[in-house]
Image (cartoon, rainbow, N blue to C red; front, side):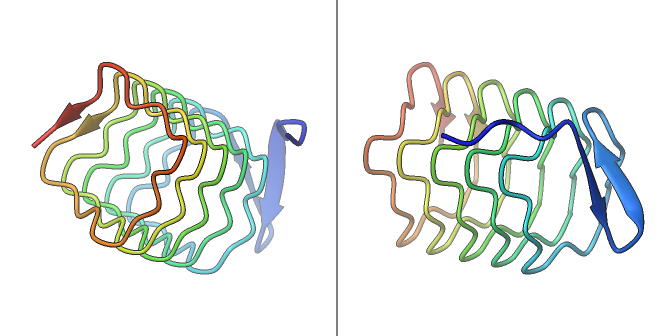
Length: 122
């Protein structure tokens, strides 16, 4: 597992824990190991993004597009993932404890070894 990066620079913008990234276009962006705890990523486009080992604890990803995203080993404990599109996303070994996944599209998503303890699905 990589060390969590506390701040990242993407297209000259600094991204850090708790940021408001509502509706941001982060398609195919490399966010491996990023610290996005408690970030507002509602309706963000993260299609194809590299979020391996990212810390998304408590993040709000309601309505986000995560098609084909790589979330291997990501920490999504307590994250809001309502209505998220995770089609063909890689969630191997991800921590989804207590995550809210109501209405999420998980078609063809890889959930091998993911921890869904207490997660709300439906």
